[in-house]
Image 1 (cartoon, rainbow, N blue to C red):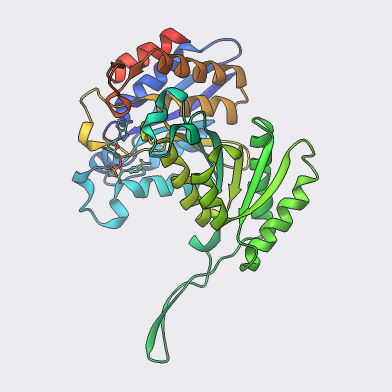
Image 2 (cartoon, rainbow, N blue to C red):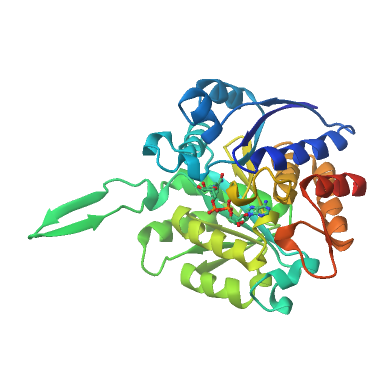
Length: 355
Ligand code: NAD
């Protein structure tokens, strides 16, 4: 299969980490996988070149591609621009245009990096969970919304709203993901006080009839936030709405303590996806060859798994990353005494050598 990848390196460390991810994809070419990559501008570099963070040419390439691989956007030099021209607007625009409603964020803590977490190593070592967050609905987009005057004071209001079809489509993504992993799905809601999330729970239960091989459980969001720090290894896949997912996915990513290790995927209804590291453009280390490329390399592995069903190729990359960590290779962000400090390119070299 020859797939078309739209490559958007972006700003800061984006180009450096993307280069390594593309080298790794080159190295796993074959056995039913081939690709062409076309590069375009997004974020601050796009503002500088064209005046807008998401130029028309980028939009066209992204729409035509089978998947998009993105580095990171942003930097202090663009922080004073009007809101519409900020680099982050480019990200919002591409997510909206491609209707990427499902956000998948794994939080994996490799045993070798257990000391990077602020939790006790025995609580987090070997952690491997996936948070599936709905990305285009909920209280973030619901109408009516605003701030109005009432009885002589200001009143702020938002609307939490989910249509059955929106819950069903994110539920399907989560059940399918659980099927590819440990076959356990925990749906997170607040059905004891919010009718909207009572519907969420009802639809998840209805959907579970189609996935008899996946064990479905439910948890209230306040308890889920506690359980994530108390005993996170009880979870396999968690699915939740936009607002709860925003908070829980950041909480889960911090369990690992290593932002340079965490990939993410945002999918549409046909599993076309945008794949990117969870971290930002790290302007403090940009251009120095110090950035950890593993989150971007692991994002490329997720792309092979979720958009192209190339499970063996994805697993090959993930196994190589585990081997490299076990062999003691570390970029500065995950460095500990007694390990071998390497730069961005050497880390890419080590992964390729371990494939
Ligand atoms: P950041 O994630 O860029 O950096 C936070 C810290 O983590 C920094 O010390 C940085 O050096 C380090 N870090 C991040 N990724 C690393 C990597 N791969 N290897 C080694 N160290 C790494 O977050 P920030 O500093 O809050 O934001 C910087 C810029 O990135 C801002 O302009 C922000 O808007 C943007 N940003 C973009 C995205 C995105 O593109 N998706 C996400 C978050 C922030």
